[in-house]
Length: 334
Length: 281
Image 1 (cartoon, chains in turn yellow, green):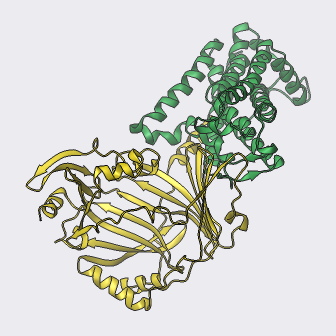
Image 2 (cartoon, one colour):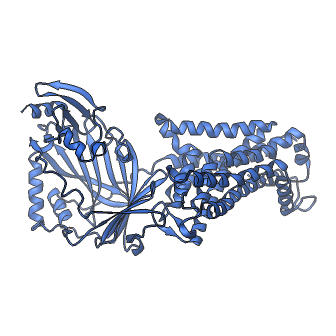
Image 3 (cartoon, helix red, strand yellow):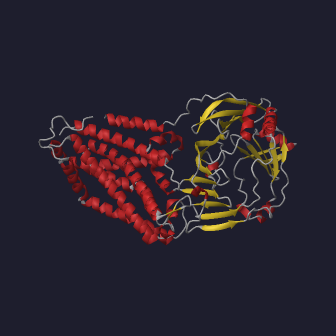
């Protein structure tokens, strides 16, 4: 009988999630210094990690993008530290794999056995080319943020087994936003952001959390960064820059407000232009989701999620922001 | 827990373990219903192969992945049959092992025979495990052959879900891992079935409990409000078999489902042993 009890206890232990360990002891650091060190940080070099996305945004289900709906999804990333990379997104009993071998990006989808090859050339910009003085840039970024938020380093955390600082952004009380705070966990040694957590008003659980659940640095198998289309796969070559030529110049979206209550108002292309661009495939049909709203600004449909609101008006404008619907309607009627 | 009763001395009248296991093996594998069932199981991969070839391409999930990629077939067949068919075989063996003997009145003879009760339980568990291993191996081997002969494609290699190509040897390794993992899950089902078998004289009760339990577990696992229950359910990990088709392999789900299965083995085995040790002859 003792064995049976042991088995039952083991089952219970398996079900207990691996809780967060004790907060690691790290030398204190100011928010400015932390941001500076993140911008100045060297490339972390070859790494392999598992990224987990915990989504509680409350978005409607979008066909083909199960990660958008509420739930947990994972992906594996590899990087050789020199521009090559591999991303693998398992999805039930299929998998999407994207390999960047330095000369081309291969996208493989096991569900329909297709490979899309897209050549990347010398036009790839070296990263961080425009950051001249990281310290000044960090100083400016933090000062800009302080106009609308409190920025602080709020303790430490252990993310993917690595000690990390928690950088916390909280909107000032004057900001009219749905968000409560945004936390970024920064690796204490490599100064690499390890986890992003978005908390919304009225809920203690994160609305969105994306971060490494497993991470190791060190040389990776070079075979991970090559891709040979398997036998039986359909290979299509994508143009180097798809849609650059045929995309008509869209009007710049209008931005109302600043800080946390920024509202972006964009104009959707008229319906006939959409049909010319390939019919129904392009834009998902949004007329069935959301709820009907109207006001002095007109009428439209309001889509609510945990962290953001969007209104699509009947005259083709889209207003969106991390704000309550009232701020959107004010921006629309402006 | 002592496995050998103090009353039986090891030298006088105690049969060697090897002979006991051999006797149980012959007893299990000579049963016509076991043989018929194993024969029918061999047909399943062949039927899937013919279905995939006739229907040509299309379809999602593992079945869709078989098209033009025959070595997926053994893994897909094992994963599909793990849902009900393979547990049915194990449940039948466990039902015959104790409840069946009790129904025929032959269990009394075994309990009175100069064989320790602990050994008797081990012998019966071995018989169930043999059925699990045999059934899984038949599905795997027939799956490999049918995959290569009927489906073919991919030049004797395995195209993983990650889009890489594995040679025949490595592909066989992956099939082997899937088979081993499947046997682990079946051992959990068998241990629980044996425990039920030890408490009843009606083999049908065991069979109904196993199949009904699996269906109830499946239903519970599908209710979103009960998602906290998922780590406790054996069926939660049943879809992990497809992970052997990824490259590099992800061990997380395979490992956690195997640990869960071992916990079920401990629960089932412990209950079976304690019931049999205290049972009246």
